[in-house]
Length: 318
Image (tube, rainbow, N blue to C red; front, side, top):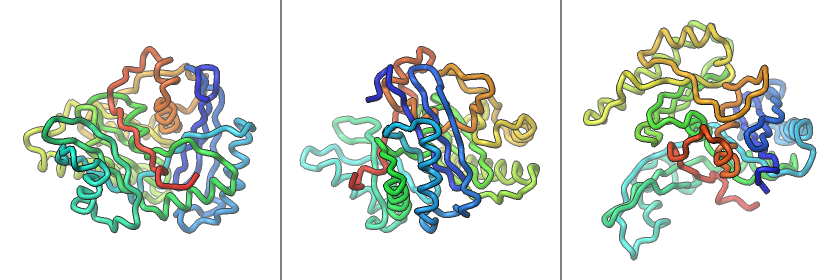
């Protein structure tokens, strides 16, 4: 379906809106967004599913009226992840090892989350696994809304992982700024070592918003470096600012002046039309790059950085 001549459609669902992007090969064909403000969509688990379904149905039709599967992106709020080692014993199945690690490491009731994982590396003695726990209530609510909107999805990815794929750097600090949230992702040796999402008041003044985000980032980095004195995040690590608010040059300057990490621009791996709000659709682009037909068609896109692919909906009935 997702060959070079077929479109790749991505749908990123944020707490305050949804963004749809369609690409074909290296070209961005169309993009649309919609706000959930009218539906008071502060929590997907309590939203009016029918009202939200109608909004998403209209959004899909505005870009691709055909019954196309979408690659879905979901916010990282309330998800928990771990990078853990499990014994590489032939008699121990990966699923059993994952559940054993989850019971030990995940501070949530396992019957209330969906476990997804990706094997990072393997030796004769052990496997390194990226483990992700996502609340079932969130996934079930999203599934319900999509079903009522008659939107089929191919897979569902977590926003921080899509951001890491968009930046595609082995070492990076990513700051994603939305009107109602901020997401911090730290990439070390091509792996996400920090994925942290906070809720931010929408009516917060720009200066106060930047101070809140930068303070949270500095605390997070200090905590990480203290926990990993043998391998801290260097101050020379480039930072990348994404999200709807990142298209504001003044906001970028304020953030750059409040953090110790130099701000850089991501490599361009698509042909961006004039006026395209790149940073607002960073998650969508990261979702699209998950498809081999897209990533292979981008010569500037070097595969191998943050190759983690998980499907949050793998438990759900299609």
